[in-house]
Length: 181
Image (cartoon, rainbow, N blue to C red):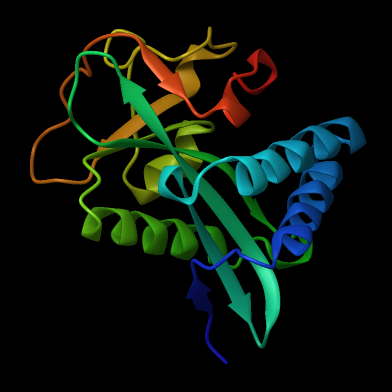
């Protein structure tokens, strides 16, 4: 059965938190797994549905991956911006292209909802496969200091080139913690 994608996280919070916790524990250690699991908990439970979007990948009813997009606001810019964080594909299913398919699906859904720009903070080599390009902190001022500025990435979801976002930014409260930046 082919991969299936959904956006409905309601009632699935515990399974999604478990996916992120297990995936990050395997790749980065139990402390990082707990940290990211807590982030996903806050994103799903404390962030208004209008300010977050979850894309879930499944196969035969099994949860294989998920990613969360949440709203960012720039003080002097009217464009609609979301940030992608975090992303997880179950460890035993990595290397099959599930993450790229899931991200492409999520970006297409955001594009269809009129979102102008998506940012993320991660591995440029990985995220460039789905259209992200390196940007500078002058292009989009992050809400908190970046530990690794080379991981600051963005892409336009419109036919317009990504031009600098104006003004300071703020993210949803769940992401407003220097440990994630």
